[in-house]
Length: 287
Picture 1 (cartoon, rainbow, N blue to C red):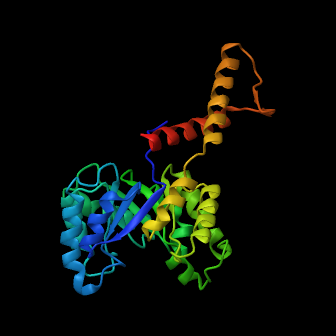
Picture 2: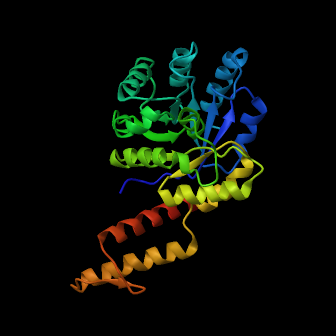
């Protein structure tokens, strides 16, 4: 099993706001997305690029994973954003509206031609109907691509759908993207929740995302961090049961027994794998 890296809470920070970039150093987020796209007005793009790349290169964010969200390929800022991000060497470069494997290849070539370090991964935002239908090809297009990020606002817009509790209009798209990510062995993050005042609604959507199988959620405000971190982390009872599953399975194997039960339920290899994943999450979060 590969080493688990927590990505429960992934917070967007506006790249043009120097104070916000400084504040982010003390926030309890697993990862930060320093944003050059939606959060930055056209006249502030160049200043934001300079600030964000300096922040990403500073090594002042501790354990937090740092991604730079560049402007899309259809904008005048995209190429220079990629070159500057490559020089800064963040953990990842997040590219919006990725709709095909060919676009991933183009991003990869641009980063390589700009001498991006090997540790700088590609994160791809999938936020269109086409991307939902091509999610597996996008996710599998490059070993450098490690994470898919749901763009649920744009997806809802393109579907002409409404934002409603439970997200019924988006469930097909969420499922397709999740299937594609898992088929390619990649991480996938759920989209944002827009109403920062509705923490009960936000937490319900976190629970839904975790039940679906998402690795974490993208956030737009620091007040969303605590419920998100809590929901996407295994609870004490879950951790304790995972330990008992592994212990019981190991004991049965040592004794040559073919049937293992825990709490009256039969345990198979897949349950052991799930238990190992939960314990790896728990250990990584605790450290």
